[in-house]
Length: 357
Ligand code: NAP
Image (cartoon, rainbow, N blue to C red):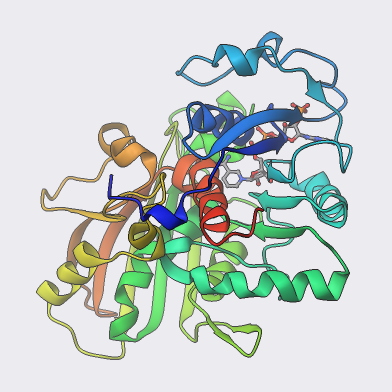
């Protein structure tokens, strides 16, 4: 872990809550907050099905144990104003839009995983290594809505992986991108895809996913100009599939570049890619956000997905493409870098920029 700049660390721990604490992502956020150096998980909320129950009495579906101090917390209802200022949202998108708006209006800083507000022009769609400057949208959002709180989002789990890989290639002027995903079952939440559909099968359709990847990636890579994000001009075409993998989305990516680049230049760009979290030494920031595998049969979800605490994007098989310019394979942990870990990194950036005080 890199050294932390002394002035980026909060003076005391910041209390945090989770909206949707009982789902796949909510549980992962709780697990990652255990022993977190900056944040203290104090409050949990979910649907009426879970309200009033002890967190430890509800099904826990992660391979790491539920910390005792969280097991004793009672799951509350989603009442704005009740929890701490910082709330992570891992709510189902059917309810997230309205609930997150109500929490932001009640002065909470909502750090969301849900899709509902991601493409709102005044909501940052953050990957701190790529677009930390998009946080400048927060005061504009507050002013327009008359809120003391705000909403900050992290991208779709496949878009995070693609955007990190593409961000490293921005110096070569991205023109066109083709991506085909092989997405893990945990990406569909719990219980997700029926076992008889998923076992030994490939499902060539994930509702809404291709549109999200195409639109969100261009916003993430976009430039902030006069208080608005100009979408990145690259054309992106996505095909998404669900495969019988537990964790880890794999992506086959081909890119056309405006500026000629040798294979070695691309490798160097992947290996040297870093951003604001590495400079600030944020606690969840991987020292190297992109790791390249020389072995031609890597990365693989089963062997590699947990590396770097699930916070790195792993790339392999960089080769020439006879249609576009280069093609490669990328892998990322969908519930960590693609969701819970991404949200926590976003909150660390907010804390380091004094937006949580
Ligand atoms: P999930 O396992 O289905 O969990 C959904 C959560 O929302 C649960 O805590 C559930 O509470 C709550 N909820 C559902 N219906 C509700 C209602 N009507 N009122 C109040 N609360 C309700 O889903 P997930 O996979 O964790 O995903 C959570 C969010 O993150 C979604 O918006 C998803 O699109 C997004 N996301 C997921 C991933 C991933 O890899 N899984 C990646 C990126 C983003 P109860 O348990 O009480 O029902």
